[in-house]
Amino acid sequence: MRKNLVLAKERSRGSALVMAIFALVLISGMGTALLFLSRNEARMSQTSLRLKKAFYLAEAGVEDARTTLFLTNGEGPFGDDLETAAGVDLAIDFDPNDLRATYSADGNVTGLIGFGDDVPLRSMTSLDTSDNPGWYAAFLTNDPVEGVATTADANDRVMITGVGAGADRSLELVQAIIRPYQFIPSVPSAAVTLLGPLPSYNNGNSNAQAHTGNDCGVTGGAYAPIVGTVGAGASAQVQAGMVRADTFESGPYVEQSTIGDLTNPADPIVADSGHGTIDPVWEDCEALKEIMLTLALNADYYCNSDTDACSIPSTGPNDVVFIDGDLSGTPPGAYSGILAITGSLVYNGNTGWDGVIMAIGEGSILRSGGGTGLPSGAVIMAAIDPTPDGPNADKSDWCTTPPDGFGSVQYDTTGAGNSEVEWCTGNINSANSTRSYRVVEFLQR
Image (tube, rainbow, N blue to C red; front, side):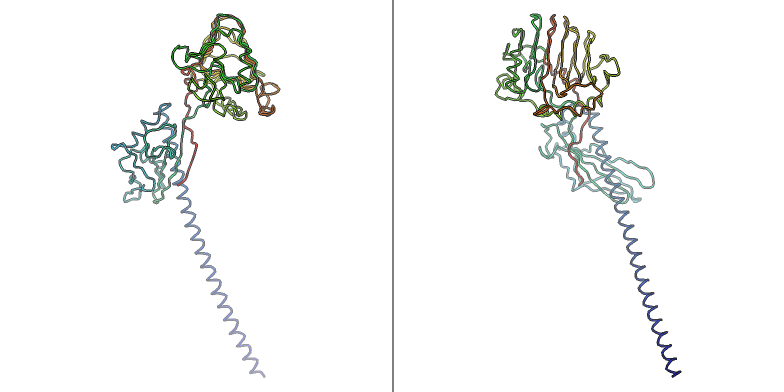
């Protein structure tokens, strides 16, 4: 019996030893697997960080190139820039798939290959001189709509390809299509544009006034409607409100025929002047609200008439004046730029403005008193604030008038004197200049 017990104990010890060895092997295997996974995760994390860094470098290339192009080109067309990018053979050979970075013996990027004789918009540039340096470059091509290899640009859109490279041989490419950006899109071709239904229009009975759609008053050149409306009913309403129709002249058109429905391509003056119909953005109330908010944020002079006594400061053609509320008693003189006002505008007969006046909100303009003031450029009006309640309102009630957010504007120039109103593209373009190049599409390759 005692012998059997000893044997049983020895067998039990042997089984325990086998189990212990098995457990040790299992734990060791799990530890090895966890160590492998941890090292793999670390490698993946490092790879991800390298690629992210290269991506941000490529973005930096796009932004640097966008700024460089704007500073050198400004409002000019992109055709000459594309020709420069094409190189000696005047053909854009650039293909992102062919790009490769070259490296020195110590791992630093020395340049790029694979773009033929094309000229980079931004050559390889070092962004970081630390222990983990990075480089970027950028190339200019046309946009895919016109064909990236073409050097003739007709739609004012081009594409910038940014390349980011690291000392770890990471390489990333991003592409951005850019276009010139103005605060006001596609200014309607009319001296005065009255948006919305059935505008109230009164040009007064002074026979000394002059209303011209001739570009900057030059007879025999380009012309446009003196008053542009949205819809035939609105045109008829303006024609009925004309007091001295004999003071209206635009190209071969006189009197009531100078009023055009900007939404109708068959309207005689709209068709014959050749400017096309109004951009649909001007019929979108929410879009108008966004334009006004953008102007308020970027104004060189902002005034809230609830808290300040607003006046027009001395301005230049590139300035934006934003009056949040009403403005009245404007002093005589010549001003320029963009004047945006949400309330009513009452101006002196001797006050002139070269550029764009946007009375959008209450949509009310009154010229009072005699004088020789000349609004030269474009006036755009829209009544999209149904219950004008002051500039401190958050404008949440704008665009709530059924059915499309537009009410009836009030335009009254009953003041005496020989003041004029004229359409002038030179003043419009000076006021609504290109402010930057905006990215409209973005792609990571």
